[in-house]
Every structure is written in C-alpha cells, then in structure tokens.
Length: 377
Image (tube, rainbow, N blue to C red; front, side):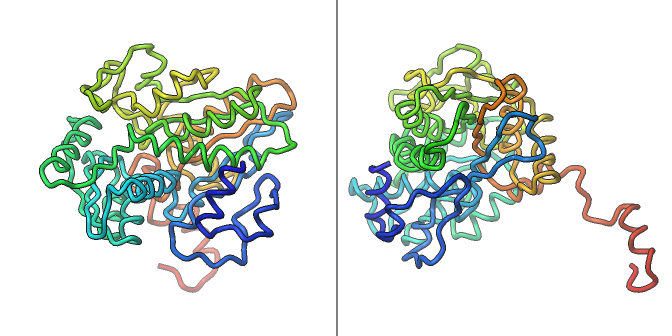
C-alpha cells in the first residue's frame, strides 16, 4: 500500500488529506481533484456489491475496471508500458509505438500516445470487433489488420516485423514486466485497501496477458495468503488446464499457437498462446484453482448483469462473473468473493453479445406506443 501511495503522490494525484484516508468498499474516485492530464485518471476503480445475482449467504463483489478513462483494465497496462519506456530512455518525442492487441490495449496505447505526442500503430486480427478499430483510429492510431486464420500469434509477429523494419518501439504487452509490476503497484493494493478490515475469501480473474493475475495476485497472496485465487479461462481454450507448456522464441514471445487453443467469443481473454506475464504468475503458484467457462455462459451473464444489476460489462466481464457465481454456489456461507470486470459492453456492439438486441421497436414497444394516440411511427 505504501508503494502505491508513493507512486500516486509522485504523479500529483493524491492530496495530503487523501493520502491518509482509506475509503471503504466501493469508494469511487475522489471528487475535488483537478488532474494535469488524462493519464492521471487511470486506476482507483470502484468495487460494487452484486445484490440480485448472488446466491443467499454469500457476498459477491465486482471491481469495475471500465471506470478507467477509456473503459478497460488495459488503461493501466498502456500507462505502465509508456511510463516504463520513458524511464528507460526507449521513447523520445515523435517516436512511434507499435503493438499487437485484441483492442483494449491498443485503445489504451492510442490514448497515451495522443496525450504524450507519440505516433501509434496497432496490429490486430481482423476477427476482433469493428468498434475497437474505429476507436483507435479516432484516437489517431493506425490500425493494421492481420488474417483471422493466423490468430493472435499472427498479429504479434506482424508487430515484430514492423518494429524491426522501421525501428519503432514494440510495447510487448505479453512479455513486458512493466505490465505485471504496475498491477502489483496499483490494482493489488487497491483491492487490499478496499477490503481492509473486511472478509475476502476468493479473488476471481481471467487472463489476457496475465498481468492482472500475476501482479495483483502476488500482492494479494503476500498480504492475505488465506485468499483463494481462482483463475478462469474458456472451455474451448483451456490452455492452463491442459498442462501443456508454451513453445517460445528466444525473447519469450510465442513461437506457435498453443495446441489446446480453439477460437472463442471472449475477446480480450486467452490468446492462442500462454503469455510470459501469465507464466510468471503460474510459476509462482499464485492460483488455487482454474475454472473454465463457455462463451454462452459468458454472454448470458453479461446480459444478466446489465438487466438485473445495471452493470454494463463485456463478454469477458460476463465470463468472470459466471466463474464467480460458480465459486459462490459451493462456497461456505458468509464467504466474500471479488471478481474483476475488465471492460464495458460498448466494446461489443458488433459481437454476439448484442446479436439479440434489436435497434427497431419490438411488439411490446409498439404496444406501448399505441397506448396513447400521438407521436407514433
């Protein structure tokens, strides 16, 4: 907690009075602060209790990472990578940052590059949602699409090619230690602060790069070893569950698609390889259990959160909550469970999450319209 406090004071985010105050569960970002730039608004996301979907006798909470400035947990990663590169002298004004991403990291990097004056080039498989491309381009980034058939490893190799050819700074989110270190410095301490003096029995998270799991998980286990860490992954891409190792290049990047991978609809979770940042957490044996979840469960739970809790999270958030509810179903009475919700449902408008959400009025809506005489279509 002291490490995180010092970091935030150095960024000019905390006032003296805030630095000594410990907010309770669900405390939102404090009001009455003027930030010097958008990067200072990253983190300090709220924890919210789940009231209608949680089973009786068990408390379920969600950490809403879509409260970050560009609506995903990857805003932490983008800031971490850029700040790390600046400290190391790897970026100078006017340089270009290139990265491979399913979208949210690219959006975060595009935001940070826009704020600092760097150019940004993103490589992304064509299968990821169209709205992600448009958001990155709106932020000034160039988006280079790669064939869906080449999966995540294809977009990674394309980013590597472009970096070598043009001398651009390659962010390497999947291997970059700054990823998990930033989560150890911010996300983990935030959770510990919000649950200080309160029960916390389970922490549930999926993985994309594995930075949240490895970084925040390390801090949670160090401070509260009794907390059980539950890692989740798609049924059709159960890479960790398989027990099969990852073939790697000399720099730690994937050499090939993991044999246990099959395509799945949970964008942002589980690429077609085991990232180095994830391996760091696995090697440290941070997790107590791995639970798999289907795409159908994830979509249904995301919609249930929206319609019954007012929590508007994407398919990955639905996957995390579906896993948390599985944990809750067998947890001892009185247990408290916290799950990470990585991003907003607005990133998924063109995906199966919204396949049954119509733009036009349905019969029920038409009936409401006809119940009074005026202003009918």
